[in-house]
Image (cartoon, rainbow, N blue to C red; front, side, top):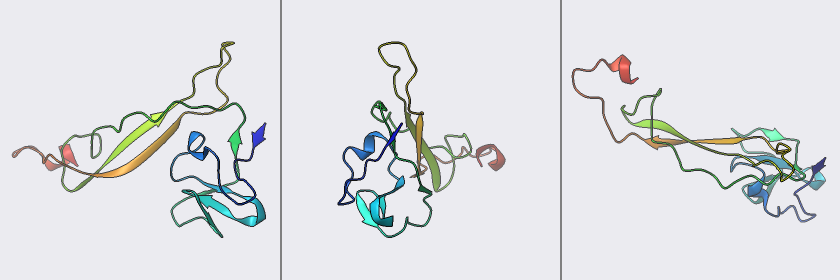
Length: 124
């Protein structure tokens, strides 16, 4: 069963427990909720989801950000990517959680260049 997290004023209560920070959800009156702000449409780069919080979905807090990597390598030049995830533990009756594992990605500055003599293809 789906339950809306948008209140009549288009503010979400505990919205972060259901969605990642870039989630844009449909509110009443045709508005979209993004990062706690009520908007007429979702910002570019986000997908306007039509779904709402799943009843009984109580995910764990977000895990730590991974190390900064570029194509799976810890070395590179300028920008890499980091990721983190969270899941929802099963209920006390052993039934699996109703909410999916969630993942977030963000851009990060590479702190380590590839060692000299190493082929660039190995790092990029």
